[in-house]
Image (cartoon, rainbow over all chains, first blue to last red; front, top):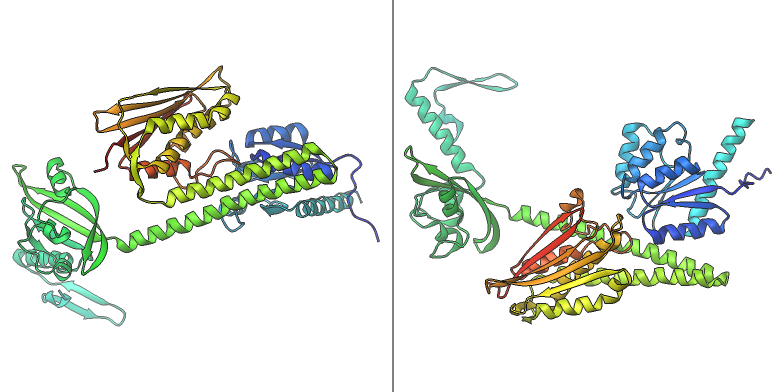
Length: 149
Length: 377
């Protein structure tokens, strides 16, 4: 059986977009221990600049952000021809049936945008986060192999 | 009135609908019909309507008023609604007649032994010489509406509270993960960082609980003579470590003439503490680093009736967008530290002591000012 587990030669870059310094520190510890390279942006504007400069392989996005909400940033990225394919994990402390996740769903629907690759609700277990990222990057790997093949 | 009063109309019954065709009538009939129609609407309105003279005597009242309040004709309006023999404290009729404009106010009233919340709308009626001749008072029972509003607020509060606590748990969870990893890998620095996160969030949780308790306290019960100058000095000395480490200068100018306020000492302590803490946070959060940060706290007697306490900072200021939200439930701009209940609790405490809170904010800082009467009326 072919092992499809994605084993990057170079460390994958994850951009953590989160305004709570303690939570972003936690995500950084979890991800860096697994060999990812991380960058942290604490508001929407810094996040967009970081994406332009570092072109991350994956983004974790908190929906409630100062200076440009997470929903606005999400829409901007999905509409961008270069950044639209970056996988996004939306992280929220609200339940998925309430604000702001519902607002995001409405925006997705009205702008015909592809949904985030995953939705995670706080508190987030490290294992859950890592398996989600693994799944997303594996899928991406299969997809890329398909393109090459 | 039933529609057969329109005896001059011909009713044509087609299978699907009934058509009402008017036949020719003279002016007087038409006028009578109009009047009957208005009388019908007046009687059937689901609210209390009365017409009063300028001395608040009820001259006419609609069916619902007569049914719920008995024969009110000739009685004063305050006898009927307030069971009192003098003008109500907040008489909107008086205000309406002075200002020439309709006035609205709410009041608690007992109807058939049950408490009800009524909304009064008072419309002055003037003659051609602009003399006040009549007053029309329309009163709606908004008890169930108020109840529904209260339930909505309670449900919103519970859901926001749950969200707040969930956030704290999420961070405690994060802290304990970091501590665990630090122990596993014998990394002292990590253990320390994780432990700080846990400690900070224990404090946040306990702040939330204290704020909730203060918020739900209601009217001050434990009344005593409170020395506000002493409270301010206590708070400033409690926060001294923090302000010193953040290089924030705190200037006090306390008026020795102010008298003790009769109130709840603990509640007032927290109300003022919230304002000073917010001022400190506004200085810390200011992104355009200024050369020096200053918080000035003042107390000042006002005509021997009460006093003003002002807390002024030169921190980041409140954005235009947030100015409307600061007294709303669980509003915070301080991720990871704010409970979103601080200012709300302060406002509630000040109001419960018969006082007023106001603020003024620009990019150069914010001034919060509270007025507290020495004695509540």
